Image: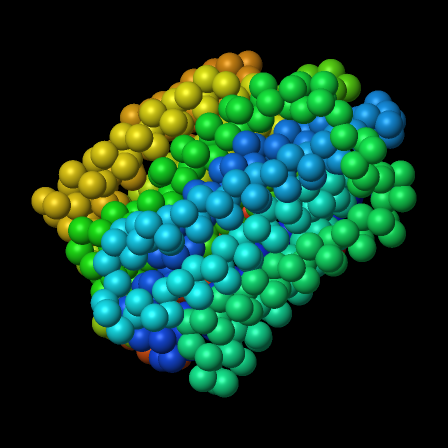
Length: 501
């Protein structure tokens, strides 16, 4: 299979997985709300927010390992590839042990209970739920090196197919636990089991599909470990920054306003996160290809890929903002119930944050795939700290609106401005050639989509009206984009990607 077709296959598989995971989430939320209620569901979301930062103990080694494996593959250095994957896995075992100790100490000192402000009726299920969720996160961390190895060999399609199966299994087993009366503890147990099964599955794929790789303690290298610590530290900073930017809002809301306020904000934020996943998938999927092209010093294809990526990011940002602002809140009301619909101002800020995030994806993909992310990592850490401080401060003044605004402002001022400059520096293209030209070409689709949406949104009060209204608005935007904003080359790529040619 040619590299282009493999990349398209990887992107298609990633979108399939994302679609399945999104459907599972959309199905699961109303069921979880029905069986757990707003407070327990908010507790489960907040426990995840507590544990996600503990994955930072991996120090960015999965990403560093993926880049190094891609480079080793490009140079056909299998001995180095074996050292990379084995050293990464041994380090992640150590990271998992550190994570477990931190959580156990926090439970023993009653820090988690005080942080979550749980009601007396929930304290009996808090500890077993946290411990089971911790086990799931440990298995998740350990399986990252296996997933990264598969991705590094540009077989993202294999990895994504397994991830799709695991998402469906997690939903099915979690719902079965709820119907069996196991409650939130059962949901956590289902999560832990699926993560363990996923690690086993990825290991089997690695052994069968990539026999050149050998995961063994005898390949562990202290010298390679020190070599990985440098770039790993900056990936760690990026992960820490991402946690501060995206992962602490539920904690801030829970600690200041209580668990009952978590669900409406988290559901709206999660909806925008689904769109973030749609936008980031083609960029993250192509990371190994970017790394390989960079290792081969092919500047022409890299520059062309960057320009196409920027145009794609602009198109997605405009389409997503249009759809969410017109139909997002009505979707939440129909899907999860009007009791968990967030106010318009907060939702608009979340949508704006999504748009800024999408526009950064081309530059982010190129920075991380080529390990040129040190300055960006420092800025992201500053952004994360600013987000935490502003969200905490403004939450006391404006509630959940302040939390959302505390995320948007630092993102625009810090990483947004830097990515705008970095994109032009990496592509060696000016503002007019890289941004203005693409943005101007998308004006007709935006106007047509907006006009269609304004006319159709009055019908979106029921599922029977919402589905065709949102779909027709998207079709109007995409059809006008196809006619006025795509080149013959881009149309050929899309035809191949859709399997039509």
